Image (cartoon, rainbow, N blue to C red):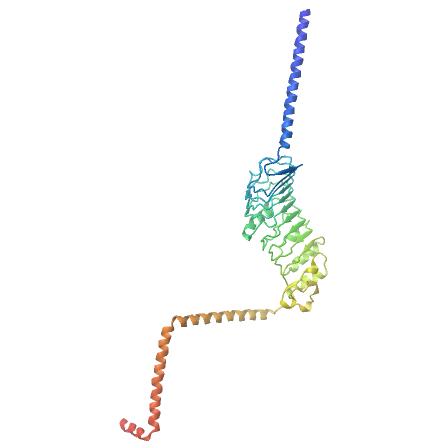
Length: 384
């Protein structure tokens, strides 16, 4: 009986020790996984980059691709001044859930491909300025993206390359976008309702983009408060746009640096400027032409100074110019024909000269006969 109790007691002690060992093993494994997680989240800084806290900067390092092993706890990633020609889905292989700010400016970038930002679900601010983007996939952003600020200043150097970003703005599901910078690009003429899907857009910068007219639908954006149209090619603002401006009293507009044509067509704009406070730089707006009003502030131009040619006068002026061009063309063609036929014309002139000479000699002979009676009688007798 005593031996049985001893055996049961030893068995119980062994089971307890095994349980303790098992718990210790499990605890050790959990500690190992935790340690690995900590190491992964705080892994070393990528080569040629500088890291501090949750910020990674890789600037002016002549990189040709996004560095590998970006720490997963990064919130701000700045890769600027390099030679990264394109970015694609392999550029960000890790799921950087905490990343909110991404700066890829000044990288000579030419292509932004599909799904490139799909591993950055909480990206809020993206800077792609000072690049040379030729293609921009409308599927670059995830459908549920949270992008709020997009800087594309100086990124499109010819009008044909703008089409890609226009498709992104129309179909890229940028529902949270509040600030859009398209300044210093060759935009010229923007499609109507281009920004219609950007319902939360507050600030739009179109400065120095060669724009010749304000696109329709831009003023219907419900949240828009700041519109920068400085240094474009606007000659006038249509009356319909002025009416839309009046309906958005909280909208601030900048218009300086445009070549305003101060003739009778700008009358409505002058009246609106003198009665509105929405244009923050109205005192600096000046006439570009006609010559007599050049550099004169718009606010100082009187309606009596605004003149236009009548419709008929304009038509006649155009007709005179066209007629002058036609006559000049005919003259050039005539001179060319004379030059090409100079030898034949020369022979023709000689023949005319000889014929005239013979004709004149005949007249001279008859004159001599008629002036001398003796020769006249001789002539009569010879005729008989």
